Length: 66
Length: 207
Image (cartoon, rainbow over all chains, first blue to last red; front, side, top):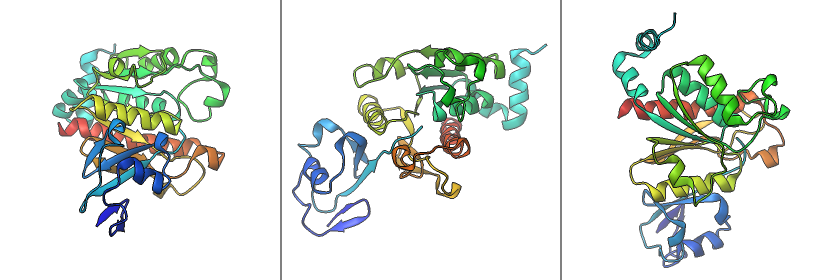
């Protein structure tokens, strides 16, 4: 089970890279920060980091204004 | 006559000498001096934060006066110069370092490296993401307080401060995008700015 922004995924995200997860869930890579198990993942590693069972992901999406 | 000692004593009466010493010794970088950044800077200056690094490339425009801490007489001035003037009128003893530059992933490090805490106060979502990712990547010890979602006339109670992890705090309602809400109101932007300023002061106080 992988949890992404509070939603649980039994198996469909297991083995996907962060980049694949972002594309599948249609996040905009330019306006996000990705936290995996309390650590922010560097953008350089989006294509290397593979999701595994038990991972907890938070994708922070920024919106404009300020 | 107002002296630094009298200023520090007055602040110590408000929040205690120990806290005053911590604030005095802190350096905060404020990236973006618009609706968020100028308001955050004012709050931190009033609280007695010792050093502010102010970063923006823009000039004061008439449409800024609606929510940003500038005056009509300052229209056309660089925001760095105008905000420095305004901050020194409030706290004559604050140490201000101003950079009239546009930050990008290549120069963030050099401009914020001397700060203990970095405040993200940009207006574009891509730049917010850039700064947060850069700071968390480039430094292992610095914290960032960022803001996202303060547009429109929605409920004040939706503005929150969230701890994303031990180095990353996010203020705002995380959804009200200025591009979709088509409005900003000073009171709501200031509410988000206050969240950010308070979180920064809490972090300093707890070190």
